[in-house]
Image (cartoon, rainbow, N blue to C red; front, side, top):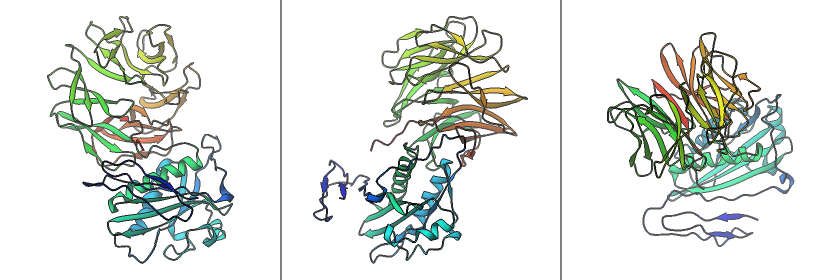
Length: 464
């Protein structure tokens, strides 16, 4: 059975029809501009009805070899847009970026993508086994007037069967979205989890004496400047739904905190006390933000209700208490304090009670951020005159050094699935925004922005 999910257009809903013969396809059409659409179907080969699962948490994990063949032009149309290579290249890049797959070079392929079949009975799986592929992606496309129809299929080479397949119908400029969608399907089918292909990273770019906020997609594309305040603007923090950014700016000569509503561009003042005002972590429900405020003579931790602006003080220490971060369930807060002499990590409950220290090694431990999975906390520690990234659990156990770079690491932030970390890497005075897997491997530098720092990873932004 083929499940047809109707095309989403301006002012219309989704039409769903089931038809074994793939006839009677009905589309909702409306006047005006057609919204970006995706039409998909899900077809299982009966022989491959059980989900394939890859244990990427295994200590013995190794990247899985996958082949992504050039897509085949279907029907009688020509490949005027270079889509055959585009689909394969873009999907291969995304799979490589995950750190879970090794994409086999095209030169090793024994089949010609222009003529090879894209269904299981047409595929010579022995040819793919002989070049070491565990998984195979094939597909096809066809241009119909102003529409692009594409088909993506993921195969288990060892079993010789289909794992999952999708068809997308959209505009020609929806090609990248189609690739992103199917990359998500691959991770869901093989790993059992959604990926982070629909996320963004906010960060700061220094411009002379000023700095502005930017965003970039997970794969390093679509870099965009989102503020133009011509002053020092720093420390972006995403809200849980991804529609707001809290940040600090010297718009009025003081380090005040603000919230930027990304859809409308509206900016509101969060706190403007004549001292330090730093938003640090949103509560899981988006109703509160942990703040570091210097209004009472010391840097202490407060929680502010976003709507009412009502403050509640959580720490009352003459020491410096900074960098608070909520646990995923909002019940605990990890923060940094020098109350024991040097900066170390402490945990308290959401009311500011039951304070306990969790780091005892090192002389400078800062910038803790709680993993979305809840099982560990990343932080910055000083070791051999370099700042590196470490993880530790909430009980103070399993303290592990993640990075060993010839440079300093700052500002760690988790991806929403807890599988990756974005951070600032400073080498020879140059700061770059970088990504690694949560195990500390697979370094990737976000290119196109020098003097970039303070990265913050968004939640998943795709509402589909």
